[in-house]
Length: 471
Image (cartoon, rainbow, N blue to C red; front, side, top):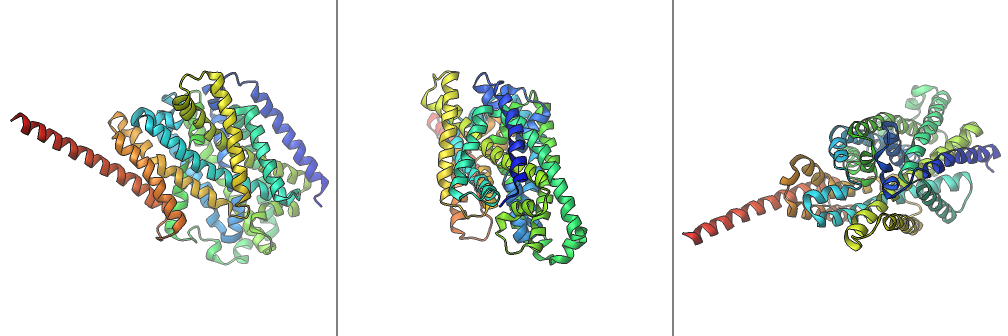
């Protein structure tokens, strides 16, 4: 039975954070406030919204789970996320904030046409949906380990929390709660890291207790596999509505850029400490389920009151990430599909209603998906999702930023549609040893270049035929 102090501390922390989130709901006057915070967020709030979504179950519970099985190779998720945030700040914050749009699809429509908006909205929504599945699995690990819930009840509870988180606070809630979550996570994880090192006699104790392979090899799964994991985070985050939504929401481009840099600085330590905890649990409790590495550490080693705060921080992390991703999908459905295709005459009130209905629908579908994949590896969903998002948007987005109106519209659209299909086929069939991300990105760029060549060649042929007919 869990110590009652854990439960009391968890509930008190969740209530405190919920009050801040509910206060945020008072700022919502229209759909713009709900989707992008009225474009009034400060650098810390931009960082809070990014961290609220990136640092979730995959970064914490999933990282500890993989470290329990493979050691420091688990840090690729947070290392890749940090590099991605640097990339956001250095290259994407300025053009995206200047665009004054709500979704990445709206940005791409300017350069590739309306079809690009529909394609990117649908395909990236599917990819983000995969990531929400991983977040929900993390939450199930928390509730089943700490509160002895049945898995199906844990799934339903998680979806209820995600919906509540979004409906009451929208993007303002995501941002403010993200800041609070960061403080809570840092406080409890630093305490945990110190405790782990003290228990095993410092890093020397961990190094001597575990063999070098695979535990202390960042590339234990293979050099190109490790790079692909990190790179999938860069291209996935750089091409995801949820994180780019934070770039759209800053007061100005400088604020958005600094918010991304703050996130890049704060994310890696979380992965390092969670990896240490995973390896520590491998040394001392090798027979537990890998996904219970972090929850079991909290129950067995932390002071109940601090442990309760950490449980609450993890719940907020998982729910916050799931909520941010769900809000990202719902924003694209409302802005890019409903108001652009289904009902172009929809007023702001109708858009807000559709936005909220979309939140409920995505949450329901996630719940069904999790029921059928309850025992799968958490980080697997995160990496797959990032790879799929990146293959849809990454190269077309970069090309649009660099070449603007000079991009080849038709080649861009074909690239967006074909690259993720190739990635999915390779990920499912495993017919070649090369990571699907590399093939997907190569397909994206290759299809675009071939399209450009065909377009230029066709233009020259038509011009030649025209000249012949004149003569």
